[in-house]
Image (cartoon, rainbow, N blue to C red):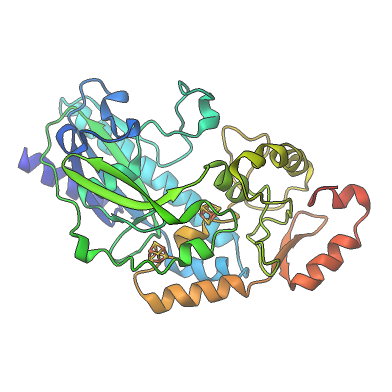
Length: 346
Ligand code: SF4
Ligand code: SF4
């Protein structure tokens, strides 16, 4: 099986992955429910994990609010590439006699949880496969970081009945995360707890990252329902300035009006489809991911670009532009009440 393990690793690398590894039933044992690979394939024995790199050149223009579509399109295409590699490898293994299931890179959710798809729980956590197999390591953000591309990756995977040979996690001393917290400082939603850590055990290894508060926070902000940072000085690519509550339990109250406004806003260029949304959605954030680079100077420069990028406003044709915080306020105040209600709480 060492030979087949080498083959599947080479397979995904030749199709565009930048890192690959293998986790098995044994190396994932004791993990959270989404580390259970038999959920998608009862006879599963192993999972191939891999990462596809995002184009680094699109990240600075996205963070500095110069160009949002290039990074968004790259993100959409790399998700398709990652899912496609998984499908190809799964078909390949199936035809070699090993039942296999490809894992979608994103936008595939379990339907058997208490709130169904709205819980946004993936069939299998690609992050758990990636850290246990040595594709990357957990940063404080909880994102998976790779040595060369940092967090600028899209993960993929295949679950298979083939008994592959597991690969080791990356050694702790090779994890470049130095706890700089720029991921947290770049997040208007407050998803990551700055003090508390969460721990998970996969096989005989324990991994930790910052405790995540309610995922509704990221759903609300990264989903584009709100985007203004609490300082009022910068925003995500969302033009909405609905309140971002302090407490998880207060999100329910703001989500409904923010969503109603979202669906009435003019639709500009770009965007992609999400199974839970009535309209296209747009890549408005992902800051915690794309600010994080192995080079600390680059990380700091990205954070500076973000926090000096201004506040996004939307034009009547749906196009978005970043202006100074003061001009953003002036533009909102000059809107007729009906239009203004598309962007902030009436
Ligand atoms: S931004 Fe800093 S603290 Fe956050 S994951 Fe990256 S290196 Fe770690
Ligand atoms: S994607 Fe945006 S809102 Fe979600 S956790 Fe990251 S920085 Fe925060």
